[in-house]
Length: 475
Image (cartoon, rainbow, N blue to C red):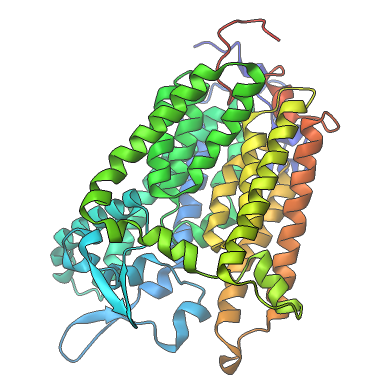
């Protein structure tokens, strides 16, 4: 067994007070005679995966109250969300109610299903690959639910669908953790911040976001192994699942221009576009109206409860912007932020790391977009950990961000049912904004050389996420 690289592994206890406290609680610092890296079973990866499984189980339990059912007089089992349970227990998730709400319980292709709301015909509002994933899991659920019915347990069909979906996404999350551990390199223990994030508890199973995170991390891993074509395929699949993986191309575009290496980026761009088209064109041709539902809904909806626009609306006398104007303003702010990030990336004295650029792009999107569904914060965990592995700061952000969810649910309960006032929700949202802006400033200072880049220092100045340089020794 080769161990020449092991002394390079960085223990967070050396630089992070929070990590040092945890390690001291678990048994004290590593002694100078410790056989680091020679443990046959409890390797860092297995420890981190074990932590991830524990937090995934917490995530499942956080939704458990919304999985309870009741048996009616006709003997049929249905979901029991009485007493505003989904708000009171903060267990709301989109997976359970959409099983019947989007026709997934009936069989048939999801984009062929429609329903009427008022004078509008509605269709499944998710990108194609997300819809196909929901359809596949629904088929598996319908196939196996008769076995559940043979038991005395009161498990609604929608809850069984949730359980199978959560199991599948848990496997994806563990695989994602495996890849992040490799991307973290000599700072492998930073992956604990991903595995043990409070955001996993509240949002792992709020929606279908984990697969898109897996595709993004897979693309980062592929690039770091010199496979831009595969990275493009994964970005294309991720964009067919959720829109945000597309923004990863922005980070690589900046580096391609800076390094004057356009070919890998163009390979990534072309393969991602072809992959996205391969997934979308069949549905686009066969169900054009259903395919465009995602675009229609996003263009016509107003701002979401936790955005900066909602905070302004609740705390000023300014009139709300009309939706077309809001769309223009939010896009213009995001575009301006991306332009500023590009200029910063091109003019910084040292070559920026991929994670730094990607982190800034995702933060800009979350801050300026008119929709910030609380589970979107899952997108930021991996970029934040790989860009700025400051344990105390990141854990503070993740705890505050996770706190947004129960407070939002409590507020949505309404004043007639003793819901909390908007002022408390806004206080937590502003605290989150302040922390994210602080993180952004630190990343920018790090890129400009005003702060120590712990990740680069742990890897002899190189970026573990960058495309391998074909010319060793090149500046």
